[in-house]
Amino acid sequence: MAEEGMRVGVLTGGGDCPGLNAVIRAVVRKGVQVFGYEFVGFRSGWRGPLEGDTVALDVPAVRGILPRGGTILGSSRTNPVKVDGGIERIKDNLAGLGVDALIAIGGEDTLGVAQHLHENGVHVVGVPKTIDNDLNATDYTFGFDTAVNVAMEAIDRLHTTAESHHRALICEVMGRHAGWIALHAGMAAGANVILIPERPFDIEQVVEYVESRFRTRYAPIIVVSEGAHPIDGQMQLQTGELDAFGHVRLGGIGQRLADEIEKRTGKEARATVLGHIQRGGTPSAFDRVLATRFGLSAIDAVREGAFGTMVALRGTDIVRVGLEEAVKELKTVPPERYAESEVFFG
Ligand code: F6P
Image 1 (cartoon, protein in one colour):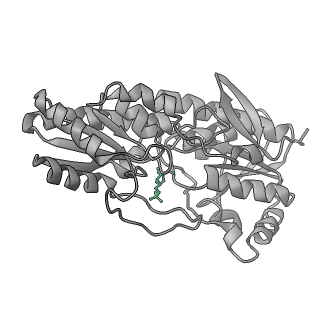
Image 2: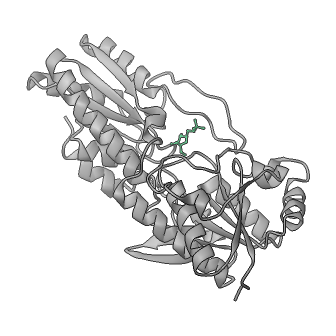
Image 3: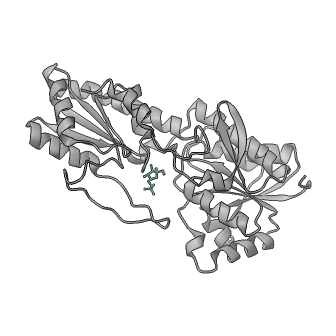
């Protein structure tokens, strides 16, 4: 059991997502009120502990933040493993600030660093977050439901304007290498075609779906995940720059598809890129509850000295899994889930 009066650091890393503040609030409220802990907020992801950049984190600081998107701590994609002596600097700064344990809220990259620190003797507990829902060790991450709802509403709106103008409208959504947002938003909003990274698409088949939709006097709506790509050699794609974790910055497939569809069908096709709108704003009720339960469970893990673990959702239960397991494998859309959506194509 960890002792009363201990100091717990909290940070949020990687791309932000709705629900981060709900986690921070739950961690602090239970930590202070139930366990008598003190907290240190670290600014901007791993940059905070790396540079000793802190912010006060007490009960007044977390008042009113439950419905607020973003993160009161700020976030970044700083990778301390890539910084010379980065891990040692973090350890020194934590010791200097009297921080006994750290709660790291983040996705695959942030939790990978947390695992690294754990192997180096730092007391870390992880909380999974990403709108992409691509962490294998948890059934859902908070932020995903909100992103899907934002995308669904946008696609609903695209339907009505597409029909007025008899245009093909393409909606590009986020998700990186996983098609979960595209699959769920596309299914929820009745898209005519959904394209995901897990299944390279055949542009000729896409064009056929588009044409059959026009023949029935409806306007086709295509939802494309930013990481989707055609089968080899069919279309030229852009390549983007890399971030500190080596991920390519995605984007542009929606416009490429629109150009290709226009060229091949002679019908007008336009692309809408939802981008960061999917990550901003207030979390859905589902995400607020999940984030709150993750926060409560994370501070319990600190209390019980369960370091090197991450909280996760299994069915309706919050469980603990090893950080190692959490970052081992990406959760991508399985073929049978994609097949369910294909019934509605065309
Ligand atoms: O991982 C979350 C995510 O929103 C991805 O869906 C997207 O590819 C990426 O982050 C965008 O990153 P950034 O905000 O750094 O452009």
